Image (cartoon, rainbow, N blue to C red; front, side, top):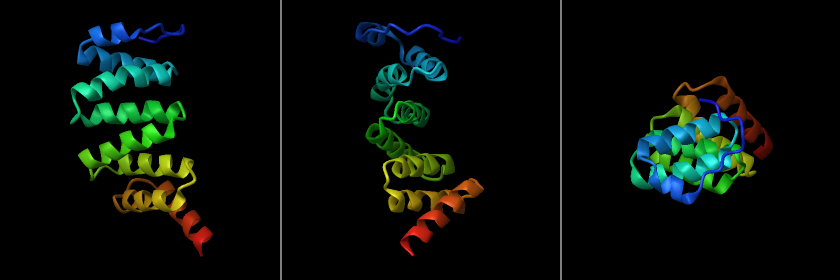
Length: 134
């Protein structure tokens, strides 16, 4: 389902949702380009299921899309804790740190993602940081 109009989701509505419905609603809101609303709904999911990597990934994506970089870093950091061998999680955390101009910290995660065979883009990001630092 695609949401076309600005959503009107109250805190009471979110509290009344099942965890599954909140996850799906958050997913739909993010797909429909309402990342701040998605993050509000997805907070319910990670509070109820703190060990769910899919929920942390979606929350991190929502925060990143809304340019809420500190919460995105927190969410992707938690995702890396839950799934340390996920190259995608490492890349997402690296990009979040890059976007905060913390390139050296981001390069650590890009190096790990590149070592896991994630993508050539991670290697390019590492080269840029190495070139800047000499």
